[in-house]
Amino acid sequence: MKKFWKWTNLTESNPTERILTLNGTIAEESWFDDDITPQLFKSELNSCSGNITVWINSPGGDCVAAAQIYNMLMDYKGNVTVKIDGIAASAASVIAMAGNNVMMSPVSMLMIHNPATVAMGDHNEMQKAIEMLEEVKESIINAYEIKTGMSRAKLARLMEEETWMNAKKAVELGFADSIIEPDKKINEDEKEKNKASDSILFSRRAVSVALQNKLKSHYLANAGANTGTDITDLEKRLNLLKP
Image (cartoon, rainbow, N blue to C red; front, top):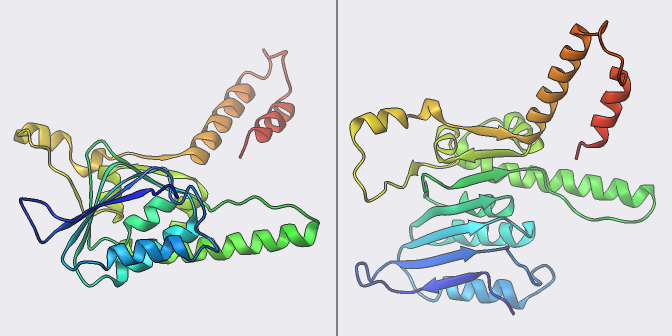
């Protein structure tokens, strides 16, 4: 079994704190319908008491595994601090929401999007897959809503648009509580430059729509001089590129 987590049970500076590192794909091997892997993680989690720091650098993975880890961390009696030092995307972002305190490196990213699956069969099977994904999305929104206090409608829209957040935007929206301060001193001028209003949120779908609107506006403004592809045909071609 290839483990995507690693425990450091004690540190010299703080012998009462354990460190959990989640690195890489969440549950690259079997987790769903597997009694061994979840139980192993839970037994290691509960093998000691005390506070835990969870370091996350993961592109995501199995939403079932993420849900169980989220629940285990939420149920843990000690304090759970989450630190994102690379990326917490997709399923990994759900796990991050279990932290009593969520901190992000100033160069890290957090991404949320709609759940996805692979399905085959007739239209009834496809409809079942759609309904399943809708329910999975609602369950994921539960975790985001508890952490951020944001409306479910806004969270659903952010997921629909596949939203990427840098540390400042994640703090601004409530997905994170603070930014990990670097050891190097930052003067007041630098801090002013790094204020929350400069935070960045990137939506893949919003960028695609904006590009199409700009192309359409440009074409209509220069309709008399254009002899190329009709705007309707161009829109059809661009729609084919949508996910």
